[in-house]
Image 1: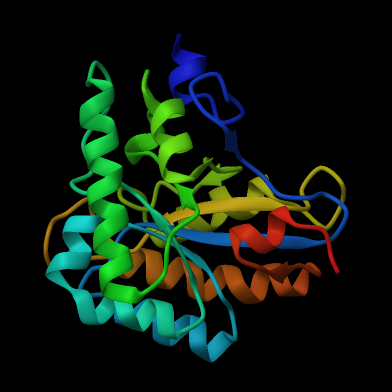
Image 2: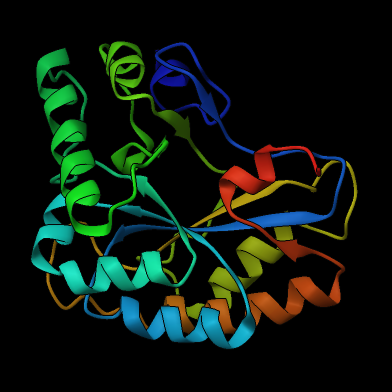
Length: 224
C-alpha cells in the first residue's frame, strides 16, 4: 500500500511519471506550493539564467496572489495543478479529491488563461479516486526523481543532496525531475531563502556537467 500511495514510480492509483526521456542530457526544475510572495525572487533568478521551470500551484495561493501567478505564466514557465488547499489525501473521499483539483484547475485557468495538463499530489500522496479525477480533468501525475527537502535543510545540504543524486549526463540520470518549493503549503510570506540560494548554485553546477533545463512536458517528449 505504501508504494501505491507514495512510490515515485507507482501508477497504481493513476497515471504518473517521475522522470523524462533518457536519450538526451536534460533536467526539469519543478517548484511546489506557490505562488508565494517570494516567487517573484525566484522568477528573477530563473530569468537571469534563461531557465524555464514547471510550477505546481495551489489554487488558494493563486486566488491570494493572482498577479504572481500571471507573472509565472508570462515568464514562459509551465504551470501544473497542486490542489487547492494542499491537503493530505489519505482516507479522503473521491469526491473531495476531485473537488480539490477541480477548484485549483479553475483558479489557474481563470487567473492565467492556461489549462494545466499536469498535477502533483501534495506530499506526493495519492489515494483511491485519483485515477477517476485525472481522467475527468485530463491531468497526468508527476512525481520526482529527487526531492531537495528544501523546507528543512540548509542550502548547502540541498545542493549536496540534489547534485549527489544526479551525476554527469548518462542514461541513468538524463531526464531527471527535481522537486523544490517556492512556497510552504498555503502559508503567506514563507521564507524560501535556502531554496533561492540552492537554485542559484544548482543551475551553473548542472550546466557545467553538460545538462540543459526543460519543463516537465518538454522533458517527456521526443525532440522534434
